[in-house]
Length: 491
Image (cartoon, rainbow, N blue to C red; front, side, top):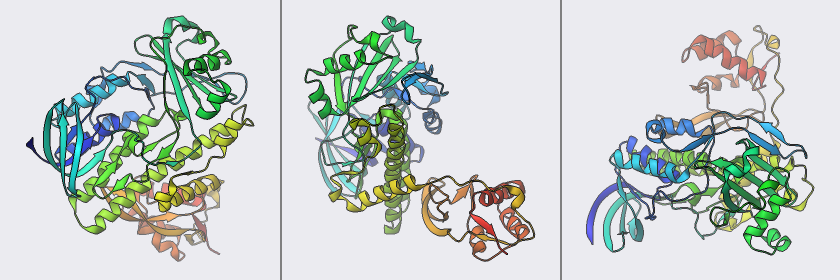
């Protein structure tokens, strides 16, 4: 065993979540050690869909050139049989299907290129010490041990068997691949089809491969089709309209399975140890946004860590934790709300599989963190009850009548990111907002709006806003607040 040096962060797992966190922390000036247990690289991996939001993340990491050569198939639209028994052709720009093994490998290669310390294959054998001074013993390769010190641990090693809070009823994914040339009539479009007991997703992948995936309730699927997973997948294709031609095609390799239950880990935040990606939360695959959300949350975790490393005070730690757990809960709640709505729109929404997912509730091991479960439930309830406001006409904004905050408005304190640090910022809350609002058009609304607790003429409000922003922006913001009923006329 040898002393392997000191690091600000030890990142476990070199998938998109771990590599994104490592790259971002290095951009912020920290020493990072990234370890990956898989010796085979590039490793085969599921989750090939990259939604348009990934582009902004890649740009922030300055990784466009590094990922340009990753094999991918540009999104050619989706043929969706969901709301009715007739397929719809939907277009979406900016999304793609990638070779996930090559995508992960390119991010890891970029980390090496930028001087991030990497150990592969390596795994954590033993951890001692405490937050701020962890002593980690790593097994590198087959026999070599390495002792390192790290101030913080970021675990992006994937979903473990530890207790989870379930955000929806159980799901399992069963998938296999066939030769794309055998399905030329599908025109390269992604296929999505709702069936009575689950749904199918199929798409062209790089290398002339065609992925077939069934997402279903694992228990109900075993009862309905007791045979092996391959038989269940073929039975589902045979029962479909869009993928019937694939039901009897030879498979390229075996059938694979994994859990697809939306969940979050109640221990995602521990003192000095944070979880990322699948280790922290898993989303329903129906949105195909899992990779984007995992990478985005990793950047948010890096900001939380930067906040603590930059200032070790207890107040900063508490604020960073509030921000991190708030983003974790919000990501899971928003996705659960969207998926419930989407499941409720299916043509077969009256069937048990669909009813359960259109009215899902958080459960599982919430007793481990009742506060986290309560926050998740409260956020879901807020989203479920939210109704977009009817916009008021601007000609009703009378310059002669003073303005004030609407009676239902509240001024709250919200953790926000400013210059890559979490800070507590005054924000506006109101039933017409999905979430409290601290910034609009990248401009801070407070302390300006605090003056509206008392009536204020429109001209004075505009002059006050214009002290910190261009006048045209001040006018747009005032109009936006008025139209949504966040400010009201007096008298």
